[in-house]
Image (cartoon, rainbow, N blue to C red; front, side):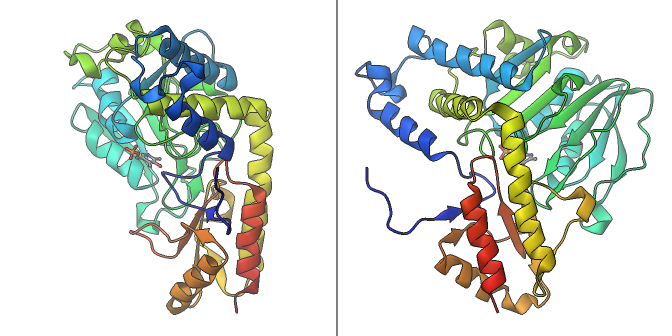
Length: 357
Ligand SMILES: *Cc1c(COP(=O)(O)O)cnc(C)c1O
């Protein structure tokens, strides 16, 4: 296998970096899956070989997150954005209300979809402060069917450090910090995440649902949209995105091998501290998120003199650093330092921040 002479340090927000060993195993499986003589791409999804992949992936999610037996794990199509619609379709009757938090463009989009299905109370928002912080003082109405949060705000680089309390169901979009830190995942009734940030390639999303909350709405739900149908068919209601699921399985195995979520969280804290300290100590750069709410996955920063941002991008590129341009809606920089990002690459960025004059 050929390796590039200059190492590339990939800080893309998503699709994003995965462990190198995962890329190697995935590419080998494209040519010959488990010595079957067949490519993973041409294997029937109902074969014993692929159902074993699906079952191991579903079981590993439960094991790594220490989920109890009320939970079902699904690998579905449509990305996290489809969940913005599928969640309220399954959980919220038209006369009921749900509580939503507006802490990023993603949560904002989720609110828009939920309103198609029922009443929505936006219980807090940081929109008028450019989503630079996580609101702390807000109340969730007692009649809220569920509270929806976006645990990590990919675009603006904030993260809920304390998971809020809700007397009913807690629902979370964990697309950009799933498997990155220890939480009591059994507190959530539904968790969803697009794979392409911390778990695998684009093309599949993970849905974890407490099966006891399903079947309560009176709405008629189309077959493909009803979580219960996917549960009954063990996440194979139709052809799943087989390759994407397989790459997720490889990433989940990698995570288990390095010690699971607690072990990777320690590394994530180290990486985030290293980078934020460099930004805080610099005279040229400044972090955009309120310190106590800073994300350990997406580090957002700008230059005091923004006319120099292109120069820094060029300088960084000369060091092999790619993917640090901020989201098209925010400008500045965003360095995404997901689970698979080695601390050595973060050090390269830190050195560039310190060396830039
Ligand atoms: C990227 C992202 C999404 C959108 O995911 P798609 O798979 O592209 O639909 C939703 N929520 C969050 C928090 C994200 O980071």
